[in-house]
Image (cartoon, rainbow, N blue to C red; front, side):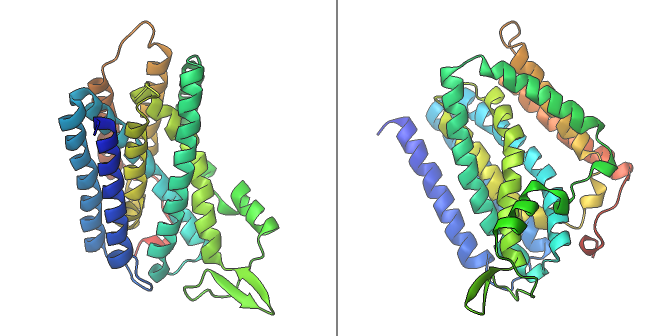
Length: 315
């Protein structure tokens, strides 16, 4: 058995076992995830991701392991920013706390499917048109610059989003209290509750996030033949989204400047892609930049409060 196949099998096995554990023990109906449980789950997912990096190091050497780890931390930091949009969506739809876990799980599974499709498409484009990396670089520099200078007034508004308008137009919905249900049958018609709308919206919103994250991860792992490293770093980061949601939900207002930290990372990654022909930046440098920018922005946020969050996430 070659190394690539073995790594695929180990990765697939870890994901399946983790999801079975998650579905069987964590995602039960009407279960409210406490802060303590969220901390345990976050440690579990992060430890699993780091354990996989050790396995990659053992099988393929330190370079692949560092590429995977850098890509994972990049995706993880971008995922943290996604959490704040998720919080706004849950607040807008008035989702009950006991429904958070199952709704997040379904939304994340949908996001994983979209990520796989995006990575496959991106790998194909990079393999066929190497100049597309420069387009990715320009896009990331532009996105990072725009993100860095964005104001509080530009905060995400679910009711104005394309995803919300499309659902209201094409999905038969009901405003009735879902009571944990995703669909309600009324007068022989199947109607989607707000829980279904949230699941679909989480999946569609992740497509927007993937437009940033997928090009960024190709700067860390430019070889399109290393799709497994790209897949695994993305999927492990996405799988940890739910526990991060519960961990950060009550502390969201304390990370006001995280967006600027992520923006600097995106600009650095974009510049790296643009100068790769003339300047070689080792993967360990990218790893240090990601760690420094994210941790620095978090610590800076703790001492410089700037904005609030929806009232229901402060309790």
